Length: 256
Image (cartoon, rainbow, N blue to C red):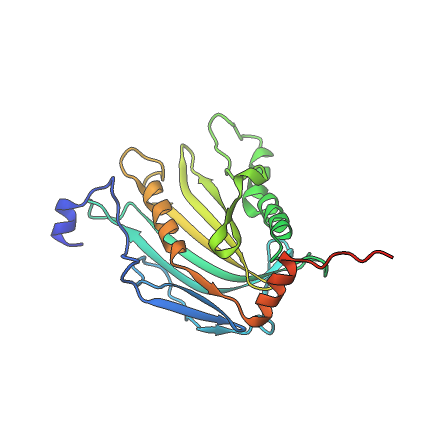
């Protein structure tokens, strides 16, 4: 860490990498082009080979979320937030996965906002956070006054539509004993009738809580995520465009 950052940094104005000057990376997903910033990784974590093309229809996907969907990680990266301290008070990590829900019927499409929201709400209600809360609440020594539960959307009103990519997003707060230590921000973006991208941002405080009077990590990570997503583009393949148009403008039912 440079002396300038140490002396002039501000823990209430934490900074990560510069997204404006970061190179862009494009992944071809069976003709659909996903493009996003790829700054140099600054977070100390295992590296992963990054591919630039996936055939979504032939990729081997792994079972995920109690066999309700299949998924494959397609991109990871991570960045520290810096202020005046010698150590970073926290970081944000991105994890993008190709997913295929296995409960969709042939009459439904992820390009249909209603169908996509139904799927997202099922994910919200059956996610690992909900299962962990259930386990905690069943423990004999669990005390609601002392032990926090995960916080996640309790209704559709707490899940937000992201117009630029026709997707939805929501937050999950991960608790510690006396406060919240991390925020997971999930974006679900349709790329085919039966496939979606799960873009996960994991914002984590190091040696502290993410909501703290000592820093603005929660605000800084939220602003970073918003800025990152504003620079993400998705150019659908001709096949996906046709599916999207059909899902958004279904043919009227015929009457005898």
